[in-house]
Image 1 (cartoon, rainbow, N blue to C red):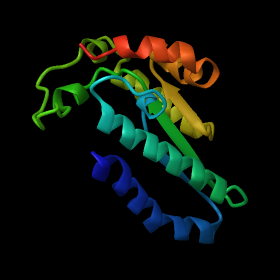
Image 2: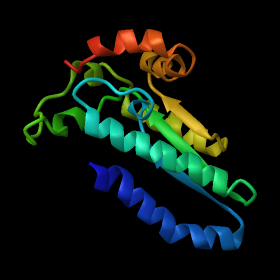
Image 3: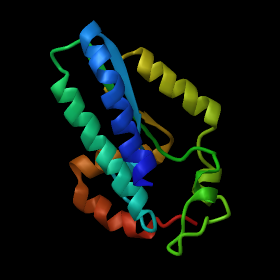
Image 4: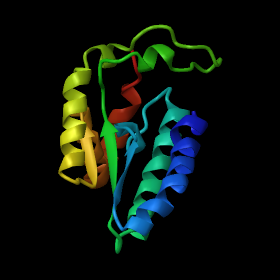
Length: 156
C-alpha cells in the first residue's frame, strides 16, 4: 500500500518536477482520500498512506509557491468502485466483497467530473463524495466530537 499510495507518487513527482520548474508551469495532482484526514477502523495502513501523501502534497505546495507549479490534492470519500473488494484484511488476503458504504457511494462518473472540474479551477484540494466529506471539517474544527463518532464507523 505504501509503495503504490506514497512512494510511487513521490518518485513520479521527482521525475517530472524539474521540467515543470524549468518551464515555470505545471500541475501535480495527488489522489488521496477522506481517510487522509480521518482514519476509520480496519483501514490503518491505507489511512497512514493517505496521511503521508497529504503531507507530501502540502510540503510540495509550500516549496513551489513562488513558481508556476501548482499542487492539487484530491480527497474522495465513498465512491462506487471495487476498492474495498480488493482491500487487504489483517491476514493479508483480499476482502473479497464490497463494503456497504462504498456500494452506496458516489457514482464513479460523477466523482470523475467533480475531480476534473476542481483541477480545471486550479483548486488546492478537491473533496469528492457525500456526507463523509464533512468529517474533514469536523476533524479540523471539532476533533473531540469526531473522535467519539469514528470508532463506530467500521466498514460493513
